[in-house]
Image (tube, rainbow over all chains, first blue to last red; front, side, top):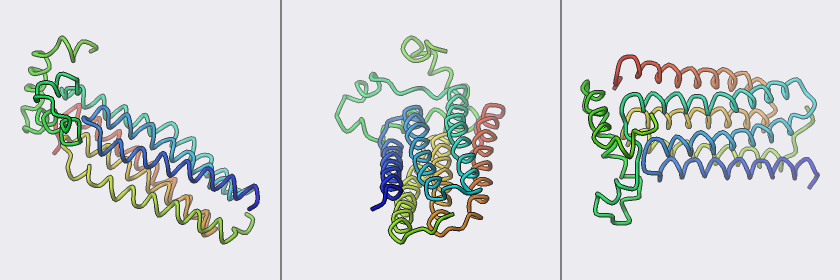
Length: 149
Length: 95
């Protein structure tokens, strides 16, 4: 195995690993904000490592410039997009998940799973009145969730 | 570019296959939701996985033309996320 092959395979293994971390986080974490956190950071790192592997394979070529541009573009825009979506969700009144949410649900360990996001999602899915009801319920529990606004 | 060895080509195609599996698994979150923003983030992850797959296949087959497709797809993916986030802030829920 040449040094080039070793480097490419190492970068590919890293890229696939962080892609897997992003997928597991997206499926298992309890609410929108934690899912966006997993998706933006882990998925960006996996994509950047894979692009680095592709750039190594192309070597000294014009295509390498394209791959490097793609890498930089992905590195800048992917967290930006996740941030924009998350801020839109917060402006719409979707509450962040807190420890009190699991304690209120009588605290069985399975509440930590992916299905727990349904109750926070019910705020936004009731049609046109989603914004009003969301801010009302955020005001009720404003001491522990909305303090940072 | 230098000639891609068969081992290297297999490694690149294998990584691309893994990313295909990840994109299919993320579709669960697109279907399940529960909020619209959850779906948008999941679709964004599927799109960035697609860009990575295109770049990996470009290296595996030595077709640098795939990279142009990947660049355009990355631009459109970013534009979709920004447009949907602006749209939801101005007008409330879309779906």
